Length: 190
Image (cartoon, rainbow, N blue to C red; front, side, top):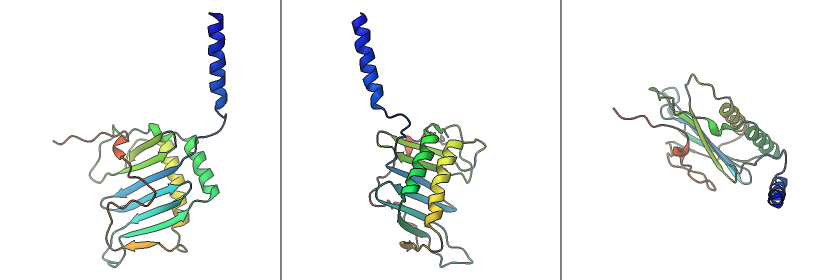
C-alpha cells in the first residue's frame, strides 16, 4: 500500500511539474461583436498571428445620406497589443458571464466575446443595457475597444466600404462562432 502511494505521489509530481507557474494561457484569436440592429456598432476580429479586422456598421442619416453603411479596417496586432490582451484575458475570467437571467428590452442587443484559447473556446455575452455589473467581461471588452480605437483613427483609411450592410461577412482566417454557446436564454414566444 505504501508503494502505491509513492507511485501516485511521483505521478502527481510529474504532472504538476509540466505546468509552468505564472504562465497565462495565450489567446489565438478573439472576436467581439457589438452590432445593434437599429443603431449599428462594431465587430472586431483579432488574430495573434495574422490579419485582424474591424467592421463598423453605421446608417445613413438625413444630414449625411451618402455615408457608407459599412467600413472595414485590416491591420496586424503589435507585440505590445498581444501581450496586453493576453494579460487582460488572464486576469479577467469572463467565461462565467451569465446573461441568462436578463430579459431583452425593446432596444436591447447582446455584446458577445469569443476567445480561442487553444485548449478551450470561451463564448460569453452581456446585454448592453443592464443593471448588472460584469467587471471581468467589461475589462476584456475595454481592451478590445482600445485596439479598435487605435486602428480606426482619422489617419487610417478603411480597406473597404460598402453602401449597404454585408450581414454575413466573416473575414478570411476566422470561423463563424456559434454564439448559442454563450450562456443565454432565448425568451419564449407568448
